[in-house]
Length: 279
Image (cartoon, rainbow, N blue to C red; front, top):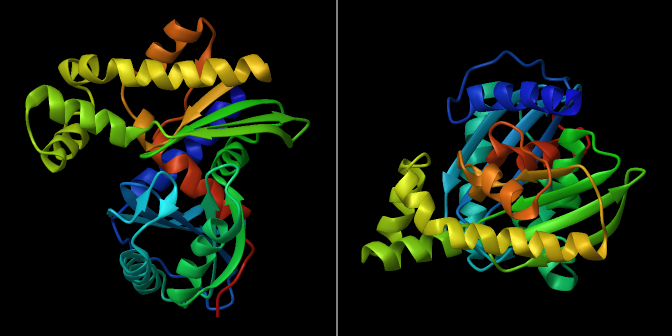
């Protein structure tokens, strides 16, 4: 699909920059967009130019968020500060604004805490977008559905004419895949998580995790039954396995599309949604 080709070009650009701290000459008056993605297993920081071309990307693994909620505020702030500092040193500018994201349906103080983390890290919080909507921005999706499989939750949003008409978020994600691995191999959760990250193409690992992936597919099926929509896109770090998309297609019996580097789609979309701001 052409829509996927354009998204993949951006994903390749961002992936090439990720954690490289590449030095770039950015003029002091150039407008940039900054996105902060507080994920369950990592925090991602992305900087784009006015035309949404990636300038900087970095992440740190962190245990600061669970099931889409910030549970370690101090650690979140410290990580964002470090990533912001790295970006400023790489680009030679001061970053003063950023946007964040939340799981769909998040309300009240849980919604505000993401903005508070950004502001405590020394930037003005411009905008808070829900995660599947951020992914849809990258895909330029007007009609269809996006499933965002994160560390703690599986979120789905259905779009019609560019507007969200249905959202849901359920607590099954990458963390649950890790727990299954830990139980099967008799190792600690920490060791299972490390092995999961290091062996993304392991058939043995995936066969152990497949029932969790099929549960995510069942969550998707149930919600698409309530609000039918095609095409279906899958994004999110927990979906970054070679057999993940095939499992969804087999279970749902429908075409499923997945961009390259699905773990970076939402952070890129968050930054795209952000206004400009640097001094």
